[in-house]
Amino acid sequence: MPFRPRLLPLSAALASLFATLLALPAQGQTLNELYESARGFDATYQGARAQYDASVARAAQAKAGILPAVGLTAGVTRNNLDIDTLTGPGRGTTTPRDFTTQNIGINATQPLYRPANWATYEQGKRQAEIAQSVLTIAEQDLIVRVSQAYFDVLASQDSLTLVRAQKVAVAEQLASAKRNFEVGTSTITDTREAQARYDLVIAQEIAAENDLQVKKVVLDQLVGRPGSVPVPLAQPVVLPTATPANIEAWVAQAEEAHPAIRQAQLGLDVAGLEIRKAEAGHKPTLDANLGYNVTRNPQGTSTSTVGTRIDAASVGVVFNLPLFAGFATENRIKETLALEDQSRSVLEGTRRSVAQATRAAYLGLVSGAGQVKALEAAEASSQSALDANRLGYQVGVRINIDVLNSQSQLYQTKRDLAQARYNVLLGNLKLRQANGTLTVDDMNAINATLAKNGSTAATPAPGERPQAAPSVPVTPPPIPVVPPVPVQPFNPPAPTMPSAPPPPVILNPPVR
Image (tube, rainbow, N blue to C red; front, side):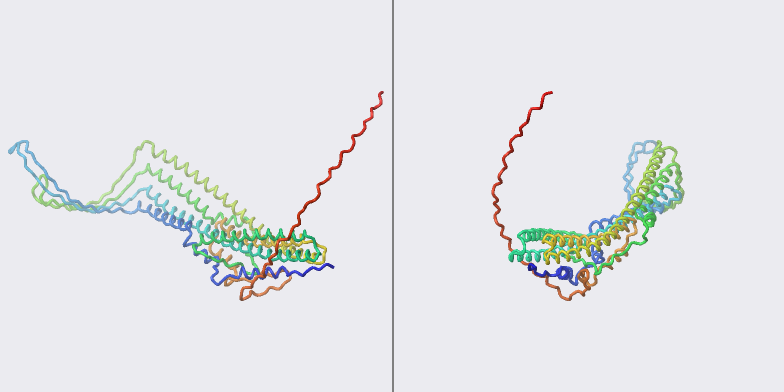
């Protein structure tokens, strides 16, 4: 039997690399911590908060139309008169007259019957509710964006970890192939195949490192804290399930609670109140006025030289009835009726879009959960296939490329499984965002799946017992430096072209 050196178990390399790369320091941040940081830093969310405050203040302005208006007036007027006598005694003479008029007063107006003002006040209350719905949508979007960036970093970390573990395994396979070639028990093909696969993994490692750095930059920019370290998932991974397990129940919840549907419904109500405002153009208005004014003339007036003071209190009611406005009111009513139909169409379109998005999110979550189960089974099968190929390679019934392909399949399955788990966690949040019920409590349920104290144990290989996480980082096995395999020049002799066969002899056919 040819000499085949025994290779290190794949699970040992995985365990050491996972323990080194996933054992995070004590300052690791959970999903909730990074979300709270993003609430105070993210520009998009801060803009939504400012827009909400502005909308609430604008809506409160509508209340002024039904409240009394009070004003204080004061003034001083200096009058310089030249009085010409035209008839009677002193005819043709001019008498100068100078005096000062001082006035101060306070006046109040209380609308008694103004239908348009009351419709505007009702619109203001609904506009405040619309602003709340818009802010709720922004909060849900922030939860999903933070969670997406959080799990993107974890997925990139897992990918880099698996690529480095694959590099260790391929390096071992390359060293084995090189030793076997030196002792004459294998061909140069095995060494070249292993070298090519090792070079490919190096390129994948570089790409994975760059992708991880990019994902960290995205997360740092979102939460406003450099060097954020997401806490990985606890081992073993326990994925939350979506309840109720009925797609129509999720759609029904969306119809009742989705903020976008609520916003569209309130928009329809505002359009209906706008019709009332337009119709008020035909109705009378009634206001109550109350005032108290003081006028002083210390030097008299133009007709008297006696100083006077007038204290005047007034109270009254003002009635106004519009009769004709050039058909402006009639056309305004037609315009608001059309706008109400538009708002009704927007509401119906929003309901359909929300129902479609909810169904798509639910089906995606169900599909993702099924993929996780299938990939878990595929991971176990790939591990068994790799073990069988490694054993077959040692006894000589398998070749090197079979082992390399099995390794690639296993690591690809592990990456797909890790990504599928993150997709399921995000799918739970996106489903609740799609039907409008996403809250911070839902994010807390996802946060509960993370490791405690920012550390987690390595994933045990099939057939091994789970081991406790080491208290100190484990140094990964060194990567053997494999020199390039010398390649002999390939100079085959020039091929000899065969000579053409003689042309066939064609006999003349007999003449009939």
